[in-house]
Length: 279
Length: 303
Image (cartoon, rainbow over all chains, first blue to last red; front, side, top):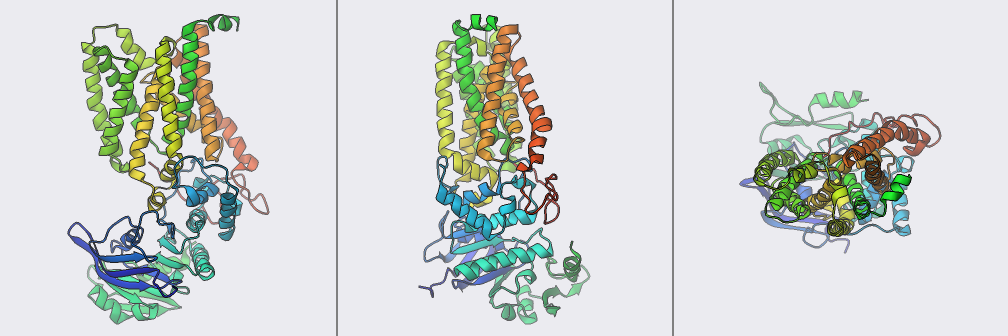
């Protein structure tokens, strides 16, 4: 059983109208793998997660998630969405957000439930969010909210965790904390992580596989296999250098009159300076 | 006080209190969601088009209460189907509201009955409701509360956290329409007390005051219901004593509740530490924006 892939893509093409976001994607993701999904904005990284969640249907090919077709509300999947903040006055606590992960989708009013409360407490402890679990959620920092979102995604004991840019808006220290939390869960539970990010560096230590999507083309493999100058040049269709500095990987496009020839400056040198000085 | 006790045996007083009780409970529960979903403008549109429905029903000699419900429910369906996505919703609400209110003006011009019928719809009629209206209002209220109880959890999920709710299989779009219909019924109820023009005093203010008092969602709803009850029943009693319109007192009471919650009770509660238990010390405990991970994220306007 362990050999069956957690997620399988078989020649999958996803289109919006006439435009194919990415095409002919075939990939098996083994259980327990930490996959970073990389690529410029608009390359369909979020759509890939939505396809696994059963919220969009591919125009061609087949996706299998935990041995079945994607279905909405699959309890085997935990989902950490792209950062969006909560209204500061919203009468809602982190504890309530995590509880939604257990039975928020069920009809009716929740009755007092000791088992559920215990699961919530355990999930809060796992992400070390007990101290602010009773504060109004809109008053918490981005990092605190992100921990609660991870607790919410994990409280139902999923086998796959989908994360959409969970490190966006976090400073360097909390990028590490959140990465460690997710990698820790993967190690303990043997679960699979699909992690959309525009910067691979914060997760480089824990990543097993990389899926890089550019202009409808894709490449998959270990970071060392994919994040190479030849491979990236081939993907982008122009000369791209992959540079390793101080244990970081930078993907830099050749400089042209209009700037970088990579349409989205997702790893320009400026970004490194940013990270170094951030907060 | 004696004056009040002397009034109690009158049927119109009993009617007003019974109807006010049910209406306040419905308004209190619904206003919590209206505030959290940022739907003030939609509430206003539902009320104004409820007026159109009511005027239309009066014109053909049908129950104005049912007309209200009809008008606001049709509007709810229009807004729900044309503008489920939050961004376009206010625009759709505005477009539908302008047209519908125009129709209302036409109906009221054509209506040859008493002009004070229209006045009553605009400013509230609670001391004028008949026994049969009371039963109708109780029935509408009960159905609304049952519907709300049935969708409560997924509605909370879709309100607070729509992306994850959708991923967990919650029908977010359908729930938006269902909630608009629930709002339509609540609007038709609350109009009986405060009228079309003052609808927000029962469908926004209690929820807005309650969220200042507690971060617990269930308790916030309970506070909101309590405030709505206080304002409605208090307003009816004060109106009976003074003969001034009910709406005057309901709006004043609810505004007072909001000011109290916002500036007197709310801030004191948060400084007592309800907002945050900071492990190992009081650092930043009084400042809700403080956090060990840097400044709180900028609150975005939610819809």
